[in-house]
Length: 338
Image: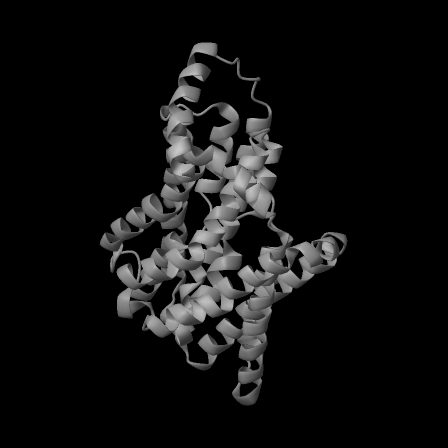
């Protein structure tokens, strides 16, 4: 199973923060640069997302609704159920991080990549990931306010305003300027990709530096980390099974089930890290640890699943089933668009 090179960079950034944490004026500079970098990151997201593709994607509303329910309903319910593992397996801070993980939107890039490898519905995966990320800008902080409360680092209306200003406003600005800058963004896609990843590394360094200076890492033991990995493995397995067999029970075809499984079972590190910085403050380094571990786990497991799905025989279409599905999907679709 592959190790994502970017995860190696993330771990190296954590090691750098442990050895040379930003302090004093350096911490203030790193925090300001991190905020600016994340705002620019979401500006690029807005510039890349085609408004026409997003509107076309609304035609497949059942698939996108299923992914959103998996991401923002089923995942949080499982996160709340894990409360029973405290304090036997998880400490309260680790549980808060695990619960926050379940509130984060889905990924875009890896969902598309794995769906493509598995010969699934790639356009649906693109739209599902994009819709999830956009919805998460508002839903994640609102769910955090309801489920984490003050345990989430003191969530308040001010936290929501900060998230909107740092994430949603730049995203909308990118959408508005897309007609003029989309060509530049497309031509320099590779270079801007380094900006994406560099922004996340800067956020990680800032969060873990603050955690080191405040002594937060003394709260975590090797046994607790092993327990956290085991809990996350179960969480991922449950979501992979639910998204695959649940989508089949709902009448989706093979290509759609693949898109639902990969978009509905994963969580976005790029969206989760900046939100954690606002919601958890000084405790962000410990709060994002479950998300970082889950991110690598989902990449490794989904890479194996995608390769196995790619070897599946082509599904023979059932005309009667397709006609029934079209009839079910067609009428509500017009009401939803109105």
